[in-house]
Image (cartoon, rainbow, N blue to C red; front, side, top):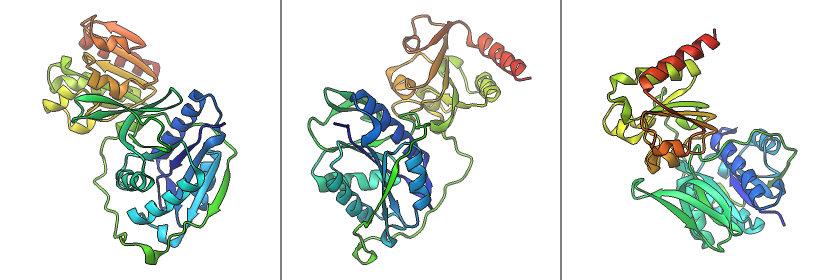
Length: 329
């Protein structure tokens, strides 16, 4: 019997957001861990005039796309989405229900879980299939503790997932699309959509960076971060940091990686001058390839690194930057 996962799609004006592809990638991994196949992976897309989004989802990971299309869902409202999602869950009986940990996700997921009478794990950074059920990892007490949540036999298990908690699905599928009546009319809504206000552009989104070069307290000062920036620029990547760096004001908080920052899973992660406290490691251990550079050979960061270099980062990073630039001409 296939492990059944229902992913609630994040879309805006018909464009599927990146968080959805990460959740679909996670659903495929969990299906494999459960000893099944991808036939139980379904995506629920809600909105109005969303045929193109539904077709894209069917071709990029979902065995079946449930398209709840109606004027009442043209824009997000918590009560409209809640009613439509609950009806689909009751009809489909999934084992796992995934939301993105986004403004919409953290708004509607508690309503859905309460309506279904099941527990909810929020802001999860990892999920593993253990003992016949999913087990969730999340941060607690402002990132000071790592909490493992086992919901026992609750069906569905409901969770909101952090950006970067899983690799986005990159394959192709031949899924099917099934349109349904969402059963929600505009007159039924008790809340209404007003507008979307965009924040200022130019922010850092480390969760989507393919390469991250991070610096820690070992750099000594904000001015010395130039060696990290130079290597990140040469590699076409982004600059990350550990919590002591942002606490000291050397970099803004959006660069912080770890349990009280952002969770990332780039193809390449370089940690320079970072000792490797557990709060940092939980935010980057899902990276594809990890290189650690530290003068302390006993630093915990070496325990998760694919390559560890014991040495002076102020000698090693400039040499790496020169080599990368030479290789790229």
